Length: 466
Image (cartoon, rainbow, N blue to C red; front, side):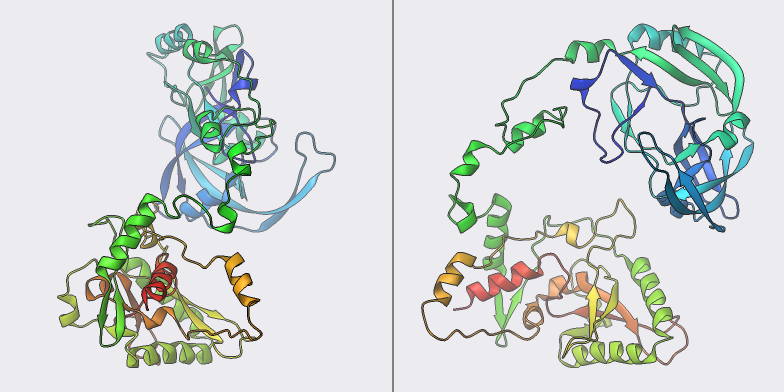
């Protein structure tokens, strides 16, 4: 039902190198939970009697908010290794729900990763029918895949708990393939033939090494040990010196065209609009995330009053200069998307001028499935001057002059309809002991640094300016 693929990359196993047999590992799906708080998650685990200990991935331990215990130093001897590897890891406790509803308490060592991707292959039709017939009154520990699918293992049950879970019952499906009794349900394990569909689709392919990148992507099962040479076209293309048929992709063309049509000039300053991918993007407010980041930032800065004062000075100075503005009731009436951006400080004492910078995280997401501000905006075409031309012009005269625009991004205004997408929180009074009831909402009137479209908007404005 599954087999372990590469531990280096999450890619499907090379089907061109597979034999006629597949080996089904002992996997199970169950609910795991935190022993102290109500945090649960359904995961796929792997039973491995060849491992002395039980392991859990760092990612799952964080998602379950597991409390880490004392750090241990363990010695790992991996397959094919000449020397053992010493690893410092922390232990956690968690509960595993068994098929009878009872929760089993186990200890596990936290590791960054257990395996690479796991391939779950469909069984032959006759084998699958036999399993389903036998399992009418039996509860399987894992699902039967109907097609080739990739999965991940986040818990490995080692020999320390293996015999506590595995039961003595065993049912033979066919020679080499068994249903193994366990407290998590019946585990299908052993060896089996490829499914009929996979056997029909399997073929051998010989390549001459001149496949283009597109053609290589179409054949995802190409042997990874073969060296993929670049297309012969790459040898006569001259993109490296800026000569090409079309300098922009279709998205870049549209982004540049929309920039020109939406650009405004008011009070001697250019006003730009964000290059949205969609007219009404599904961009969440991010209010809770930004507020939580502010509380965390304030807790860190309370122990460093100088940094807190400098941080506040930057924001107050930007407010006086019109770079940012307080969000009032009048501002709230403006149309547009409302989105809050978290921020933090970057300190560099070696800088002669700006030792403290405020960095805005426009890639922040409140949930993994949500979009960030950067996800909803076009990056825009790269409009940097050709390096070859710059070097040639640099050599044409005796004296070269280099100029820099101070805070260049902040010299370009944002149009009012797009300002609410750049809201952020800061404190009303930095001397107040807490964040509660001490928050002021600001928004950018200029193009902030940290947004994916900002470099394009700056370069396009400079290029447009006569």
